Image 1 (cartoon, rainbow, N blue to C red):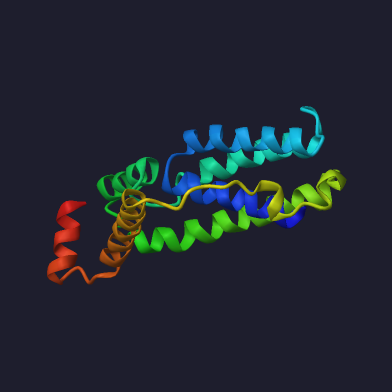
Image 2 (cartoon, one colour):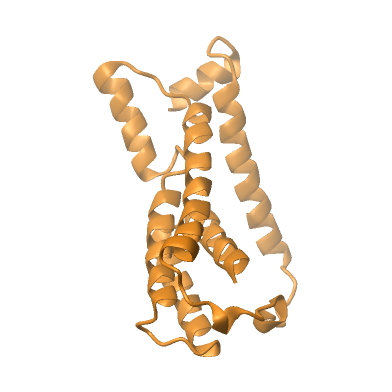
Length: 175
């Protein structure tokens, strides 16, 4: 049950990081509702309430992992304009990713050891409980996933380029 909880919060983190945290809230809250109904939890149960809160905080933190998203871009730009500190995307991510992963692990441990949530309903949980027959990804979905990964990879690689190189100067000019 605790591995499931950590993986659930980790999936929430990845989704909210790559897509949108508000959409992630509604999607993962619907999943929590389904988990509660399937495994006999009631709305006021401690585990379910803490899972709702965990997805919310995880999603808000994950929205700030990638430095070219709204709030991190604003903060980096403000630092650059107000105090002439330039923060590289790679440096930002070297801090934000481990902090977010540490939060997911820490929150799961918090639920287990400090809040002592009752997970007996989830004691025999396995992957077949959630198996749905989904069709394989079509070519458009594969293209969009590949495009997203290439886009993120390009931005990360450009942040490691020396400022004097052509690509480094292009990246600086583009912001």
